[in-house]
Length: 126
Image (cartoon, rainbow, N blue to C red; front, side, top):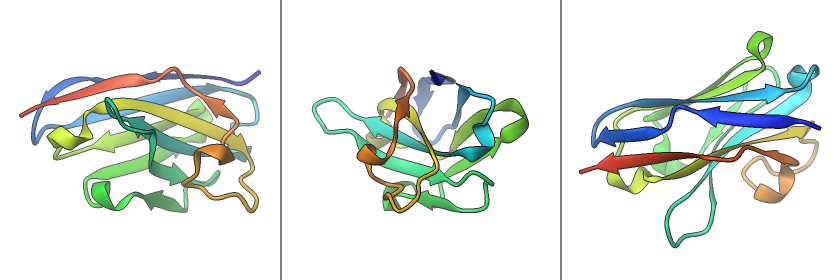
Protein backbone atom coordinates (compact mmCIF):
# COMPACT_ATOMS: atom_id res chain seq x y z
CA UNK A 1 0.00 0.00 0.00
CA UNK A 2 1.38 3.35 -1.04
CA UNK A 3 1.26 6.02 1.61
CA UNK A 4 1.62 9.71 0.97
CA UNK A 5 2.35 12.34 3.58
CA UNK A 6 2.20 16.06 2.84
CA UNK A 7 3.83 18.82 4.83
CA UNK A 8 4.71 22.47 4.50
CA UNK A 9 1.33 24.12 4.73
CA UNK A 10 0.68 27.05 7.01
CA UNK A 11 -0.31 30.68 7.27
CA UNK A 12 1.36 33.20 4.99
CA UNK A 13 0.74 36.81 4.01
CA UNK A 14 -0.46 37.57 0.51
CA UNK A 15 2.56 37.79 -1.77
CA UNK A 16 4.49 35.34 0.34
CA UNK A 17 5.74 31.84 -0.45
CA UNK A 18 5.36 28.31 0.81
CA UNK A 19 6.86 25.02 -0.27
CA UNK A 20 4.76 21.92 0.06
CA UNK A 21 6.38 18.51 0.25
CA UNK A 22 4.92 15.06 -0.19
CA UNK A 23 6.79 11.89 0.66
CA UNK A 24 5.58 8.79 -1.13
CA UNK A 25 6.31 5.41 0.43
CA UNK A 26 7.08 3.17 -2.52
CA UNK A 27 10.18 1.51 -3.92
CA UNK A 28 9.04 2.21 -7.46
CA UNK A 29 8.52 5.95 -7.09
CA UNK A 30 10.12 6.54 -10.48
CA UNK A 31 7.12 4.84 -12.14
CA UNK A 32 4.53 7.15 -10.65
CA UNK A 33 2.89 10.18 -12.16
CA UNK A 34 2.20 12.74 -9.46
CA UNK A 35 -0.11 15.66 -9.03
CA UNK A 36 -1.34 18.31 -6.64
CA UNK A 37 -4.98 19.16 -6.12
CA UNK A 38 -6.61 21.62 -3.76
CA UNK A 39 -9.98 22.14 -2.18
CA UNK A 40 -11.14 25.51 -0.95
CA UNK A 41 -13.98 25.85 1.58
CA UNK A 42 -17.32 25.24 -0.07
CA UNK A 43 -15.78 24.30 -3.39
CA UNK A 44 -14.96 21.11 -5.22
CA UNK A 45 -11.45 19.80 -5.32
CA UNK A 46 -9.53 21.18 -8.29
CA UNK A 47 -6.38 20.30 -10.16
CA UNK A 48 -3.29 22.42 -9.50
CA UNK A 49 -0.24 20.76 -11.06
CA UNK A 50 1.05 17.46 -12.39
CA UNK A 51 4.46 16.03 -13.16
CA UNK A 52 5.55 12.95 -15.10
CA UNK A 53 7.80 10.19 -13.66
CA UNK A 54 10.98 11.77 -15.01
CA UNK A 55 10.12 15.30 -13.99
CA UNK A 56 10.36 16.47 -17.59
CA UNK A 57 6.73 17.31 -18.20
CA UNK A 58 4.68 19.54 -15.97
CA UNK A 59 1.15 20.81 -16.26
CA UNK A 60 -0.48 23.64 -14.34
CA UNK A 61 -3.92 25.12 -13.97
CA UNK A 62 -3.95 28.57 -15.53
CA UNK A 63 -4.48 30.37 -12.24
CA UNK A 64 -1.08 29.28 -10.85
CA UNK A 65 1.07 29.43 -13.96
CA UNK A 66 4.15 31.55 -13.36
CA UNK A 67 3.68 31.41 -9.60
CA UNK A 68 3.83 27.70 -8.69
CA UNK A 69 6.52 25.19 -9.58
CA UNK A 70 6.11 21.43 -9.35
CA UNK A 71 9.21 19.27 -8.98
CA UNK A 72 10.24 15.85 -7.75
CA UNK A 73 13.26 14.07 -6.33
CA UNK A 74 13.08 10.40 -7.19
CA UNK A 75 15.96 9.57 -4.85
CA UNK A 76 13.96 10.97 -1.95
CA UNK A 77 10.61 9.65 -3.25
CA UNK A 78 9.28 13.16 -2.84
CA UNK A 79 7.34 15.68 -4.81
CA UNK A 80 7.28 19.40 -4.13
CA UNK A 81 5.08 22.37 -4.88
CA UNK A 82 6.83 25.72 -4.61
CA UNK A 83 4.18 28.40 -4.30
CA UNK A 84 5.19 32.02 -4.79
CA UNK A 85 3.23 35.26 -4.81
CA UNK A 86 0.39 33.59 -2.96
CA UNK A 87 -3.05 35.11 -3.22
CA UNK A 88 -6.10 34.85 -1.02
CA UNK A 89 -7.74 32.62 -3.63
CA UNK A 90 -4.95 30.07 -3.13
CA UNK A 91 -6.26 29.31 0.35
CA UNK A 92 -7.24 25.65 0.40
CA UNK A 93 -6.32 22.20 1.60
CA UNK A 94 -3.67 20.86 -0.77
CA UNK A 95 -3.44 17.19 -1.61
CA UNK A 96 -0.77 15.23 -3.41
CA UNK A 97 -1.86 12.33 -5.58
CA UNK A 98 -0.11 9.48 -7.36
CA UNK A 99 -0.78 6.85 -9.97
CA UNK A 100 1.43 4.02 -11.24
CA UNK A 101 1.68 5.13 -14.85
CA UNK A 102 -0.89 7.60 -16.13
CA UNK A 103 -1.27 5.90 -19.51
CA UNK A 104 -4.11 7.50 -21.44
CA UNK A 105 -5.70 9.01 -18.37
CA UNK A 106 -5.89 12.76 -18.00
CA UNK A 107 -3.27 14.25 -15.65
CA UNK A 108 -5.67 16.94 -14.47
CA UNK A 109 -8.48 14.59 -13.49
CA UNK A 110 -9.00 13.31 -9.96
CA UNK A 111 -10.22 9.99 -11.30
CA UNK A 112 -6.80 9.31 -12.82
CA UNK A 113 -5.06 8.96 -9.45
CA UNK A 114 -5.03 5.96 -7.16
CA UNK A 115 -3.34 7.27 -4.05
CA UNK A 116 -3.88 10.42 -2.04
CA UNK A 117 -2.31 12.17 0.89
CA UNK A 118 -4.24 13.47 3.86
CA UNK A 119 -3.90 17.10 2.82
CA UNK A 120 -2.14 20.13 4.21
CA UNK A 121 -3.81 23.47 4.91
CA UNK A 122 -2.60 26.62 3.19
CA UNK A 123 -4.01 29.89 4.48
CA UNK A 124 -3.23 33.22 2.87
CA UNK A 125 -3.89 36.36 4.84
CA UNK A 126 -4.68 39.46 2.84
